[in-house]
Length: 193
Image (tube, rainbow, N blue to C red; front, top):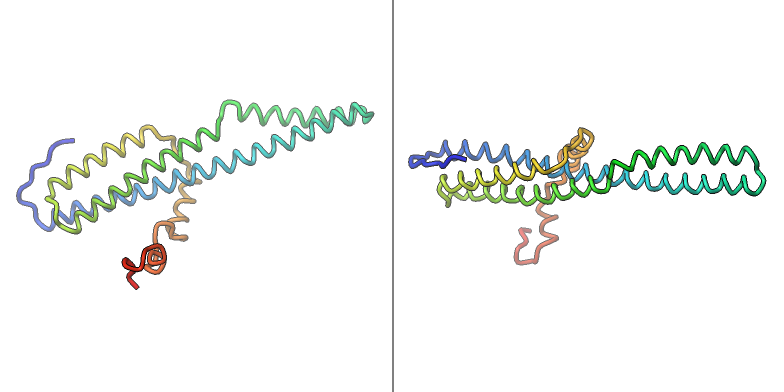
């Protein structure tokens, strides 16, 4: 990133920087939540697949045991059909490790969370007006580099996860707290009410 040298900043330049930082902050909040939702979706699918693997394995075993105990061709046919379904499910999961992919999304969410908090701190510093705009720009540029590094090493998110993140942030207000909720977590000396 290029170095910034601006000695004649105005309230308008701070407002422009604030607008950009707010936009970046919003995108980072959504990225963080979307990666969290991707991880949740994948872990749920993995749990369902594991459950079906156990069920199909038990049914396959039951079908072959019933054949052994005299059920004949019906037990063998059921065993073959169910074991074929189990084979298909196992082949699907062989090259597609949902657990590892979920972990990558969780790691990306953790790294993005840290950057999200840094953006929030940068917005706070800007609002307080104690740092020169040049220092804020340097910090902003460093955050963009860090964010690029995280994004380039992260798996892609899905539209399904984005919609869940959108619902969590807009409808369920995942990132917002009332003063009462925050007060309940703080010692009495720091409470507002």
